Length: 225
Image 1 (cartoon, one colour):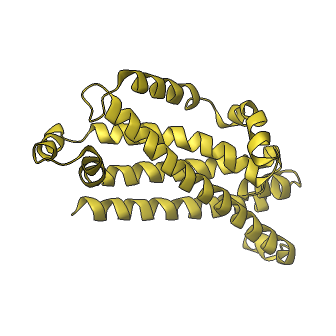
Image 2: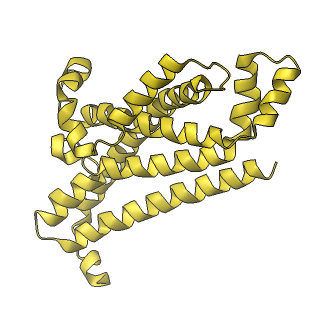
């Protein structure tokens, strides 16, 4: 097995693999940042507008909850096709890494929204009531009480999402995108080079394990405070 990898044309596979890794990081990073921010806002809306919430508003909650439930369960491959007209309108094309990012943002946003809501629900209501009794504004309670109280679990939830985005990026080749998944299919599977496919698998495992370790470390650090 070692000889097999030593005999690979690294002058070709080396730069190609690095380009694939860069594409994956590019797609995952942008999707995570934008989807994370928008998903956080939607999740806060779900939690605060529910019955008994800080900003209780039944129509807003029902509408937001309906939209999240409508989009979140859709498999990523189907979502790519479903939002294609919107992707063309916004991005200007339905192929390539930017088109993939647009769809990944949709997928991550609503997944994160539900994760945020579920983690905020676990907050002791007494903490929020104490802050309200002290005269804290609703915005201040959200920023200084709710989010810090749920920060540890939120970090773990966001770690799960960024790993899921890595999985989604592997399907980028379906619409002409790059990344590790595309590298594994084009350079490994299609050319009957299983060693190249396993090289891509190893890179993905290292990438995902690194993300999980960092997420676990951050969550432990926050929850010990």
